[in-house]
Figure 1 (cartoon, rainbow, N blue to C red):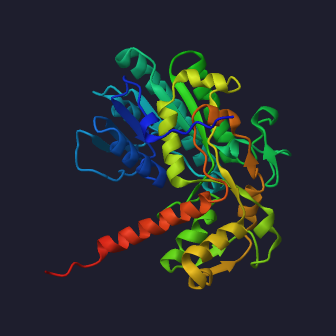
Figure 2 (figure 1 turned 90 degrees about the vertical axis):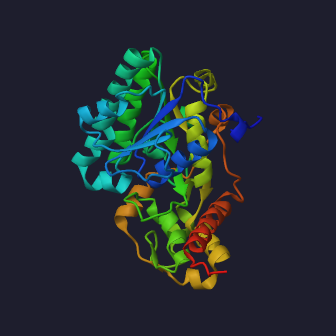
Length: 367
């Protein structure tokens, strides 16, 4: 099989997409996808929104409009489309896995109800303004999988694996995927659901995702801050090697999301008949994460890691498979990291970003 890689040259938006609406833009992935699209498409207008005002990554208001909005409110959703011709939409907003499990009502309100309202508004906009189908990317998660075939040591073949989510978050994502699928099946929108693996390395503050420690074991120590490994009580704990996780380098995730918007609808012929796409990833153990920390941060960084089991985190992580067959999704044009070097490159990306931030903050001496 020949792997197709979505290079920058291939990331060509359909001609009718002049404006993109991106929800959940206040988070790490939303911010970085916004920056990538602004870099790639100098003539593209982007509307970003979140429950708090998203970062204004450029000052050009013609190219970037930022809006604080509650997507549980239909009037505020409709206002996002008013006076615009939104040809593409990336629906990134949501409550993460740990937060959804901790707050049942909030998880469903955000991860299901607001997406149902957003789909309906996008359909109205497509029919009344665009006069054609909007490209609608719902950002989902591999947490839709669960059950006896989806333990950390399992390899998932999507066509042979039923969707049996092991968390409320996974159930919520599954429901919203089905809504998006039906809008596509009916021809209302050109929908596609992108199931993300764990994203490494996430910058910023720790999130409520159960997988947050995967980035945290790198992010905090490389900044001289302590970090807790929640899957073991010591460096030789059974789950250090025995609970692999499936992840992707952050830069690869950003490109794959943009490719999800660019991808011709005809590429679904390489799949199994639905509109859900497992974004390819690689398998990494906690041991490999700690080894990467030592490689990039030395002994000083590794000394900042302590170990204390968190049963809630372990219970959620045990519902996630450690690897997935992604052949059909590579045929669609999505990219995968190198299994041997991908995680180290992800850590290197984060370290480089830290160094750039420190250089920017360093006082400049007068000549």
